[in-house]
Amino acid sequence: MTTGPPEEHLLVLVVAHTHWDREWYRTAARFRPRLVALIDELLQGVAGSPFLLDGQAVVLEDYLEWRPECAADLSRALRAGGLEAGPWYVLADELIPSGEGLVRNLLAGRRVLSALRAAPPPVLY
Image (tube, rainbow, N blue to C red; front, side, top):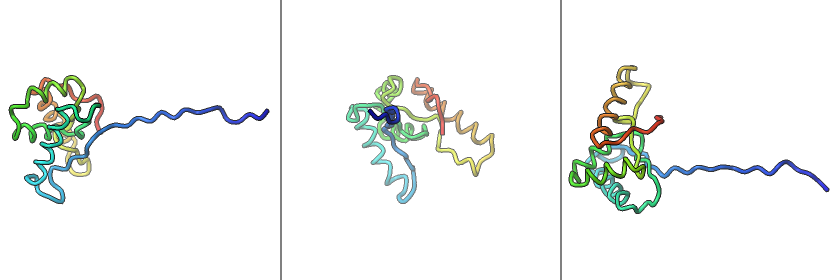
């Protein structure tokens, strides 16, 4: 009888998410319809599992500019854990701003989430 290494189990966690650039190779105006379509689908439960809308809360404001009538649904999804956004207002670039700028960015993101009666995620990146 031969013995080998003990059987190992690998735990893999998959986080359904998006990395959202408000502007990149297209303008914000060109990207906005894609954001609205994505969040519309998520609110309809198409994803079927929790979804991370990046680490920024500004996407929530962008969405609500086009779909203000969906504020209650968005709030409900955030509070229930079906959607997660923030805690930053916009994605942080630690190479550019001061420490105070980073703190203000976090505080602004928390205000957006608070306005939707949602809590910021327990982690940031």
